[in-house]
Length: 228
Image: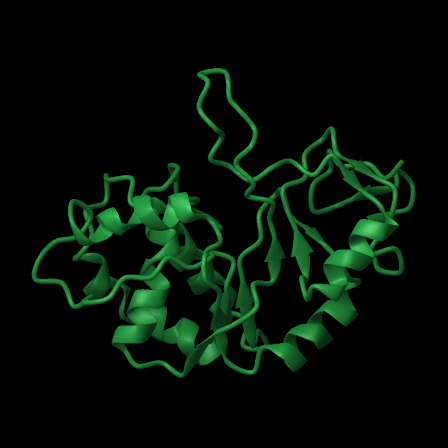
């Protein structure tokens, strides 16, 4: 993208950045499916197989309910301090931001962004990325479903931070081995997060694809990851 959008945790800028990426991706008319991944994601299948699974499993735009109760409660602020009345959102639902969209719905998100974005207070921490798209899809009566999340995250809140408060971010996956990859595949996940430079990857889930640099044995999605 020629003009990257600065983002902040939980802010409406995340929605603005997603819309900007959608606009960019729509320029390629061959793109049928759209899903968010981050630098902390790793695919659990080779690219060709991944594309085939998406086509077979996600016939409609698919959202998934968020699995963090804390996020559900906190992000309901969108209907109070985070929204501007009179807004059209009479119901609230927190969904995982790693949804999968069909092209026709992405076009609608882009075309209606100016209209719907005016209802949100943009400098409030309101987890808008986990509310906005579901809310707009519902208000526009899009043909979407609530289904399986494509991304696995471990949101157990038993890690205590330096301030003595449980951490509210997904756990870093310290080890990704063959057993875990097979387990996550059986659970229906396409990606896993959160992986960082210290994560040990002993099972290469995309070994027969060009995602791997054979010289350095690194996954190109994030050059800091090494399979050891």
